[in-house]
Length: 321
Image (cartoon, rainbow, N blue to C red; front, side, top):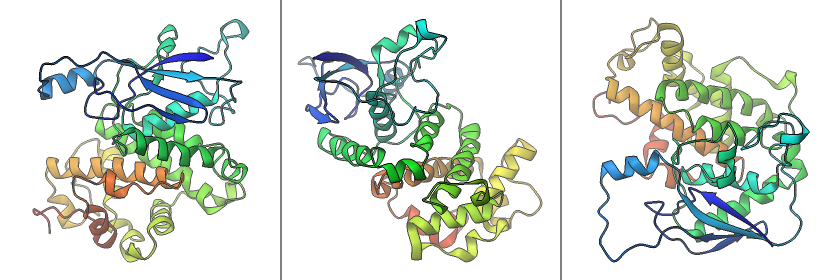
């Protein structure tokens, strides 16, 4: 039997919150962090931030038998591996695929404790993604759904073995909102041809038209809820306006020619809401490729926000409605 120590498997408020054991793909996850004392722990913004800034070795994984090789990393790329010649190479296994998906589902960076031996070891426990599962039962369910997709040859062909999962996992590690917002567009541009052609995307399926990319992906996953008149019009697409604002002007709030009046009235706080919303929307789209409909959990801070946006093309901010 093999045993692995894993960091940052958080299925509660804190890395110190125990969770019930669960199994997925033959791997058994068990909490092995420091047990709680009898004293009451009061969570403050200070200790939450401290938890986010460090890794927490809190999980032991057991596996009995021969391990499958990775699906996500079959075409190169490393996770916790130096990859500099045979003497430093290790086979990447399916466990690392599970850790990538776990990171996307919980908003924490699941990684093997042994990764600290390698130069690309990630030093922070928390990432910028939102949590969609807060207990072992939910986590096991979503991981099982994801594995079914990962092991489906048709899905592997359509999504090139889940390259977009690597993209989103890396995107979540970008600490600054503005570059993270711009990185989202790369994911949408990559997804467009792969959603369009299930038989394997080619150059002929690609598009440089952000209006087409944005509108088609929203229509594919949200159908009749989408107001196509809004998302087929560049001037009305707030995300395209914000993208152009950042890439060409490098400053906020919006002041570019072509933006609508309501966009120019957005305060910096309003703009931050849009940047955060696009993060969550991108995560929701990627999860839908795994058959996970997570909008209600991702948008729990304002459950109706996604419906309002799909209909009106903007958030229901009192300052601009």
